[in-house]
Image 1 (cartoon, rainbow over the protein chains, first blue to last red):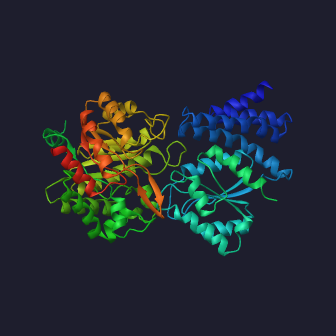
Image 2: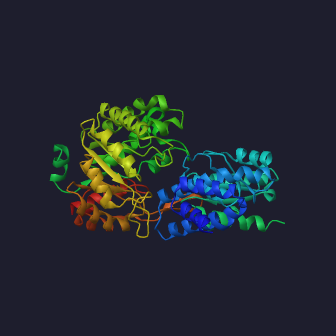
Image 3: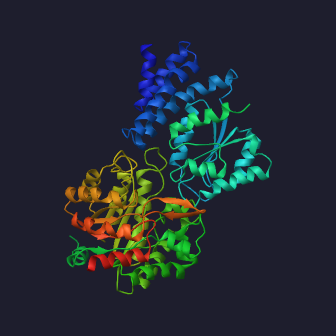
Length: 213
Length: 290
């Protein structure tokens, strides 16, 4: 569908206005919103991620693509909620206690949303208690933690320990990311998953939930 | 060229200082605490760090004001103390310098993205103007706009700093892209050098980012793209968590081994960023004085 391919292009090129108007038209003419997400927007995000990995795209390009994606999602989301569509999962995301950096966290949140997750963004400087409260109150399936500083990374371990203390460790999946974060560190603290990139985070989030029985 | 800059580089490469955050942590700053607040609560410990660099041979020391702009201070409930924290930071460094070193006051990024509308250009203009004026009032010899990733933000900061009449150093972090030669926002050394020279920066440079090994190429490219002196302040590699503590992987010896090439490629000001300390400065001084 010529018109819908343009949606893929709009997201990849970061054209929020085009993304919104194509989505509007498509929905009006009866296109299934999930088809828009799965056939055009998710592949667009994957392409954006690929270009970032290949160093063709930098943070500004990621940001405008995420903005174009959000413009489309704003129209799609109410329709999915209205018909009772469940998101793939609910993710409580935040930058850990003591850390105020959020560019990466915001990109991951945008990608997860585009990927079909419901995202509860707790912002920055988020304590273990706040993560746990969100899991309880909003029934989040995943806690996604971000840290930019090696000095604040330890708060990730503290949060995992707090989950264990509360007897909740097996009730939620823990994903981590951020500049100093490695798979090794994720294994060390017992996190369920780690991604080096925002786009990669979507795949990891899907993987950890599919393992859940 | 500003007379102060001319005077400094006349006698050869100028040694700047090293990391402050880790030095403050060694003196009790807790992980996650805001270093700039110590200008008010623990000025004597901040002064110790400054003195250690002067004693190690730094000809230029910076100030503990990297995050002391209104947007960043706001996140720590200190927005009403912008002037105080900045002035105190300069006064502390000046006391420590005691006339033996120049004080170049640090202006770091706002932490907010212009692109997403988190902050506006006019908010950035007021924030950097407010900080620059306070630093100038504190008696800074020059201003250093450092660790910038966004060229528009860097230009705004340089403009605000220039309005004080002080000489301005402008440096960015080149740690992204296939060749680690772009800032996070995609700016190249050439784009940075051109725009920041046009904005009135008297010294152009690169700090932090990817570890010292990558700085030779950056230095060379900056040197080719501007007539202004070049400021190089690499970090000692990227930190790894070893036994629960952050450790920087570049040793003092490895760091200093890169210095002669950086001088050859045109660096006029040399120092260190994250992971360095006064002994790195001592080693750089020894290396240059041979």
